[in-house]
Amino acid sequence: MRVLIILKFKKIVMIFQKIKKLFLLKKSEEKKQPSEKEGVIKYFNWKRGFGFIRSSQTAKDVFVHIQDLNDRIKKGDKVQFQVEKGDRGLRAKNVELIES
Image 1 (cartoon, rainbow, N blue to C red):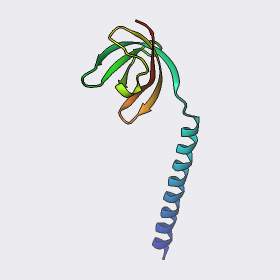
Image 2 (image 1 turned 45 degrees about the horizontal axis):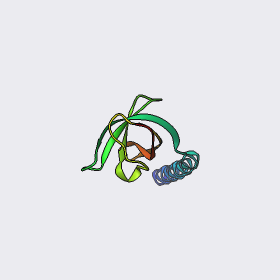
Image 3 (image 1 turned 120 degrees about the vertical axis):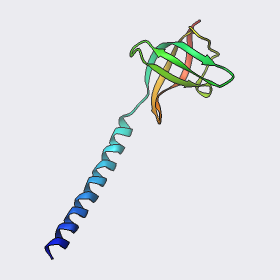
């Protein structure tokens, strides 16, 4: 009898933990807004459709896909973009050319 009560209690605790995680995830998603950054095109391959931007603020490389470009870019161009957290890391969105 005691074993059943303990097992049910543990199950209830696990359910509350899952609910808490879901609630916290929803809160963090509401707060998450893309941030404006500037950087320089480190590499871009037009045939493959992707490249990387070296962020001026964080000195980290940010992935950019051809679908997220607003202007035609090349290596060394200074750009402005928004950063979003993707499945594989940081991803640039709305990439605009500042100067070539």
